[in-house]
Length: 317
Ligand code: G3I
Image (cartoon, rainbow, N blue to C red; front, side, top):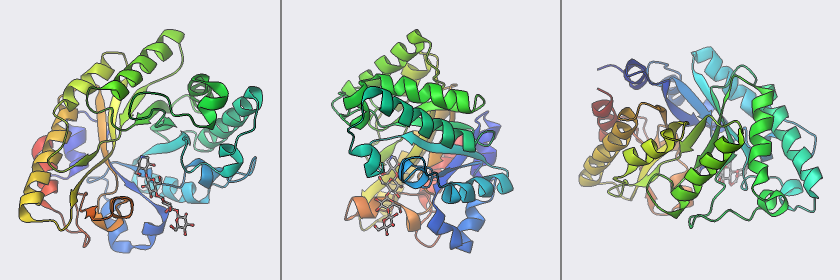
């Protein structure tokens, strides 16, 4: 059978991709699979383009980690997703501790977004310009950005990113908007208000960190609700975790779950691609965040394909 990106681009998608991270790039067997552009046509840096990595002190920009992943993508002939410009997490304390007036924080956001996006100008398919602005109940996160600028920080960041690289698509990326509910409604309303105001916005990223047996049935309808507002969508951080140990039954359910997630993107013409949040259990973020859970990726700890891989192929064929 053909590999994932070959199948995906054959459907008209822009890519099938994977997250990666700098420490893993010393693992030659891992990099060999990641770098096969018939398998993965796109990569996302899991950490090294975030604010704490790129502007640890005000006005001091460090791009070594992000550059390593950008050159890997370029050498492999892969698209790159930028992740991310403005997020409450992995934010250096010089920003999160606040104390800025609105004009100063506006300038800090503009400088950060335009410098980072400008640094990668011409190399990025899409940027997660704003990441995770909402709480699960649909209210805005009361981080330094919202507390100082209210909702205006979103447009400030999107405009700065657009100006710095007009060819890069600008996205807002979020989790728990993959099914109908208060959080999804808030995101739909944000898209409407940004569009009405003429603020640049090209896409919404749905992260899709799911649990085996609990993949939302409304995923396709959710994607359609966003594309109906005139944005593209992408599944940006897919993984489907289970309570360990993995069993044949859990792996079989995970295969079905991966198939249904990828099929939802296939069914929606504005869905441009799927990115898994690293392709292998060896480097998944899940076990360290959810103790006792894991095995969330389509390749196992030994870089061997799991039944989940066949589920993705089945959806793409
Ligand atoms: O850089 C430090 C290092 O200096 C230190 O020695 C080490 C010790 O723990 O920690 C390192 O930082 C870790 C960082 O990854 C880089 O490896 C953090 O502890 C760890 O919490 C951090 O986790 C990342 C997580 O975001 C943080 O929120 C994951 O790798 C990354 O996959 C994950 O990705 C997020 C997306 O950005 C947004 N959506 C959710 C997704 C999963 O949480």
